[in-house]
Length: 476
Image 1 (cartoon, one colour):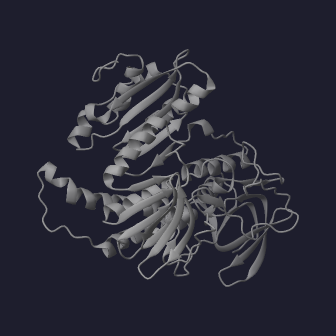
Image 2 (cartoon, rainbow, N blue to C red):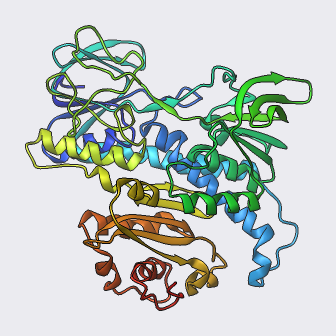
Image 3 (tube, rainbow, N blue to C red):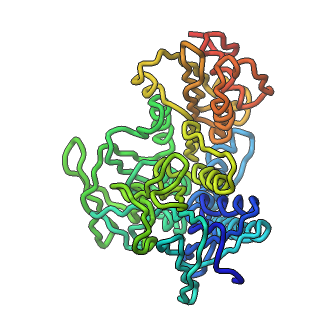
């Protein structure tokens, strides 16, 4: 490292940190990005949880497991007969690992192209915009910068009554690296991570029981979408038990007994492996020295304003370590915004149009307000829906499940929220995000020509249905 002073030092190279560093480099600033992610074999890798043990590897397994499931249960419907379908989990896991490796190595190449100095080791913020950098060999060096950006991400929350042991009681990372399909899998938590991991191992043959402490399923989603999702997950064979508060885990000769209570009283279920997926917490371990001036809130998040400035001058924070949804794309946009603001450019993040996606089958995606939220606000509204069973492309794909739903204001026709459950929902939601980013009306979407036959026509028809002028669905 030829210099110890930079315009910008980013601590963390996950989906918030590395885009921030790259954009700062594109803005002709001198940049260093420090990251301490280590794989289980001890090797360092850029990309944070998302690329190494979250978004990317989980989607690789979700795709592989769905293909396996469809080969066994759906291909015959298409006139494709496949005999003696066998699972090669080792090959499936090898593919996952290769995809992760390609993604993380790609960041190093992007750093080089943008002129970013990538440093692997630990970064610690000191007072006066100084950063203590500890390299792979434990050697410490003090760096300085005009601006420091904290992007240290998050870590899995541990359930005190069911602590991780790294073997039988594991977190989401461990659940991605199982070497065999457990006969019985227990998942604690029916959020995004729990549902995605539960879906993977259910498709591959495990008996999966999901214990959720809340009485409501997917409370962040639109109510109609949540009800539809629960129906399909049960068809897949996921045993989802709501209002199930886990109190302890008891290891026996035959497995692990999870003790929990629900509306009927004390209950128990025996499984072979347990995945604890109750959420994530901001990761700030050994991040701050004395006198930095950076304040945390009561939940451990770094306090920031709407432009991600912390309470310390020229210190910024982005991604999972700050308020808002813990989503990779939210962190990325914050990183780009901060890099542009540091460079003196105009930049912002529209937090009202951040999409959420659950990559199950069917997929679930939404942006904006749910119908329940709009109703509570008191604003007059209208709703349009369209089922995929009435969509020609979905029927041709043998994926005619779920629906599109649009919630719009009755007064000025503004689109307030879009909710999709069905094939490729995570891709379809992008049109809704773009529409809402430009404050589009339902009529704007109605007058946008959609190619036929496509899945996106379902969104078009939902917009038409909001005004009772749908073409391919009864206007009731």
